[in-house]
Amino acid sequence: MQQQHNHILFIENVVKAYNSKIVLEDIDLAVSKGEFCTLVGPSGCGKSTLLRLILGQENASSGKIIIEGKPVSRPSPERGIVYQRYSLFPHLTVLENIIIGKLLPLPFWKSFSAKKKFREEALHYLESVQLSEHAEKYPHQLSGGMQQRVAIAQALIMKPRILLMDEPFGALDPGTREAMQVLILELWQAHGMTIFFVTHDLEEAVFLGTRILVLSQFYRDDSGSIQRGARIVADYPLNTFSAKVKETAEFASFIQKIRYDGFDPKNLQHVTQFNLEHSDSFQN
Image 1 (cartoon, helix red, strand yellow):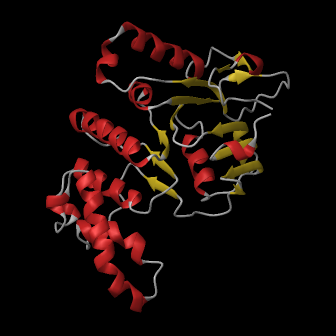
Image 2 (tube, rainbow, N blue to C red):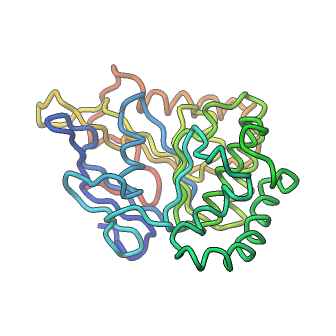
């Protein structure tokens, strides 16, 4: 049994159902601080649902989710989120978009005096995403990749302990996407965050993560039930961090293995045969 207090995130026996439809079933997961977890799986298997549970946007039907020793109850600034479509206010400048999260919790009279301090902090994060010269522009004046970098800076300024990213680069062209992959690795290393990164791109998942989680409804157990909620069917440690690895035969072979683990409806592994190779993996 894993110890809750040894991990920044601890999930045990979590089930999520909508009426009679079970989406997630018996999710067990322990994540250490500073891990970069990429999450993959077939469309509709519940990847975004799992992120919403960690965020506190939805409640689990049963089981427990513990972050830093406390049960998750509702969204908190300690958990940031970046979506595929940039959540920017069109009437605010880039700089104003970044500091808005800092200003909203403050009383109206305090926000004026705090703006200068937050402005300096926002400029620091804008520099970290290479956008400092665009501080006074509006979102419509930026490219898609630039808008997504603003959204990342918007999340970073809140100093989240866990950063959740739901297909953040899915709408970007290939060249911009690869540049953003390198950028998020640099930011992760610089800020020491724990990241959960959902993607449909297996190459991206293997390149970015220190750990890859494969969520899938394609498995079997001894219950005889035909209504399967998704489970973590594979959990591998990763160590890539170089774009050159994408050109190797080992990289391509590993991606095929992941595809077989979680995406092939004919490959119904028994729950006792899941490839849970990461040292923090466990099953109850």
